[in-house]
Length: 214
Image 1: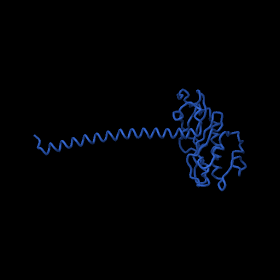
Image 2 (image 1 turned 135 degrees about the vertical axis):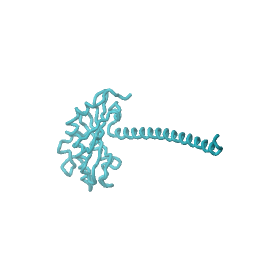
Image 3 (image 1 turned 30 degrees about the vertical axis):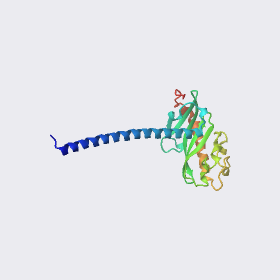
């Protein structure tokens, strides 16, 4: 027979092992639940961001389930970047692409550019930049409505010469004391429209029109 102290140690070891197993199980379940909630929150945030570019009543598919990856120098991409395809009644409705303006005053300016199937801009939003607070940051919708000047514009509206800031004889306002920033954004949006014009058939060919949200 085992000595009393040995039996006691064995019993305590078994209790500790069981407690450890229970703790690991609880942590695993908690982590899985937390990760699921984080993923759901991130998806909801993405949907809200895309909703600022494209009204929800203009498409009926799940944008996040219709993602393609573009690696396009004209859009300023340095790596494969997600774009979102929208459809309505099984037909192409729009695409939301990421574009990069590398020539901002303080560095690159990253944009979301929404283009309807007919080549009209549905909206543009800045998603990342390092421009000067109080000057260049007016490209943010929270700081200024300037970015909404792109709504409804297209490759032909304005014409090629109009796709510039007014200081460069174009149609877009610059900011007082800051011309480089809006110039960079206008140029990037113009290039995004040029890319769409050249590639819209191939882009929409990748649309999953069989999936329509209920």
